[in-house]
Image (cartoon, rainbow, N blue to C red):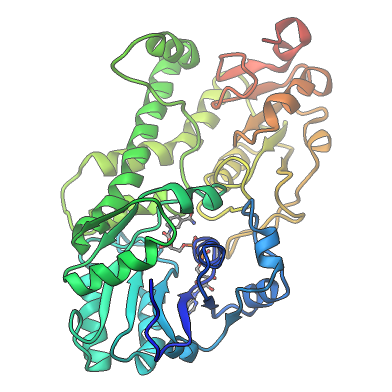
Amino acid sequence: MKRAPEFTHDVCIIGTGRVGLPLGLSLVDAGLDALGVDVDPAIRDAINAGRMPFAEPGYDALVNARRFVVHGDPAIAADCAAVVITVGTPLRNHIESDLRQIDAVLDGLAPHLRAGHLVCLRSTVAPRTTRYVARRLQRLTGLTVGEDLSLAFCPERIAEGRARIELRTLPQIIGADDETSGDAAEALFGRLAPETLRTDTVSAELVKLFNNIARYVEFAVANQFALVADTFGANIHEVRRLANHRYPRNGIAAPGLTAGTCLRKDFGMINEWNPHPDLMLAAWKMNEYVPAFLVQHLEQRMALEGRRVAVLGYSFKRDTDDVRDSLVPKLVRYIERCVPAEVRISDHNLPDPLPAAEGEPARRNHDFAAAVRGADAVFVAIDHSIYPTLVRKLAALAPDAWVVDLWNVGRIEQTFYRAHALGPANAR
Ligand SMILES: NC(=O)c1ccc[n+]([C@@H]2O[C@H](COP(=O)([O-])OP(=O)(O)OC[C@H]3O[C@@H](n4cnc5c(N)ncnc54)[C@H](O)[C@@H]3O)[C@@H](O)[C@H]2O)c1
């Protein structure tokens, strides 16, 4: 990528959160002159002081070098050849993607755009959103996309926790509806990745959604199988192990709490344009039902009323400090509806008190031993990588407790079992 002389920086990343910050730092690492813009002063202060505002392995030294500076005013984008938009695109309470952050970026950016600029949308969006952005930018700036201004959709496909590796290894999808835009975006993302794949904007939007939704549906099937197995008194882990063993034609995924800010919402970005019940809606229902399944099926074995319950893990997935759209708060609420004496939560990746969604009570975060000692029931809500070792201690700390272990972290190959089964004699 060769920067035109009228620009003093290569790239401006707008929205330096979990996607934008790793991207900006990786671009700096690849030799580009990149900077950021974010409306959140806490994010700006942390990054500009050389600290990661959240956990993402492999970036501490890069952020500490302070070569990636984050600004509050989007006017700085006027000096940058490319602008990459990485703000949030949640779902509203209805099945409708929420474009307010993107709209606010376009409004703030428009006065600073000029001929020669490349704008890349990287947030996950519903099909045809890039074409909406093109029309809105043309209206706001008077510039024509494909002639004065380049516009592309280049989706982010990293998994949280793997950004440092995946930004340099995953093929980059370049979605553009004209050649100039495609060339400009390819020159930028070609600096990061070994391979770039060109297509139009709608196809690129669908690539990202299909990548996520395919996983979401795959996990929904795994969860449905877990529910069916337990309903028939069978053991999902054994059935899955036998089904997958040297069988060449499927690989049934492991069941577990399936959520998170990406997987949970992306089905809605297609469903908002479709009135019919479909597989994606069914997958959403199945994955959302898992907390109720675990509580109801435990209650078939023991009543939780008046009992002490421990919940291990609170984030949306393994080894992250991200709690956005985690299903664990929902699991805790269902446990609380059984009127237990106490619910103690433990997640070593999170602070005490635990981060709370708006309107939620602040909940205490306990260390592992304090959470589980003397518990009558222990839910392994997330499969943090230290849990296979830690849960073995349940055999001593709460031997009579029922353990709810959909992830099979105890390697007992049962979803519901008594903690004494984790004793040394049963260690595998
Ligand atoms: N988190 C992931 O692993 C992941 C992976 C792939 C794709 N995505 C997609 O990437 C997008 C961003 O996700 P995220 O997890 O980084 O979100 P995030 O909330 O962590 O980051 C968004 C950032 O944008 C900032 N912001 C909001 N409005 C702004 C504005 N007008 N100007 C400047 N900054 C503004 C926020 O302060 C925040 O720091 C979403 O569309 C998401 O679906 C996320």
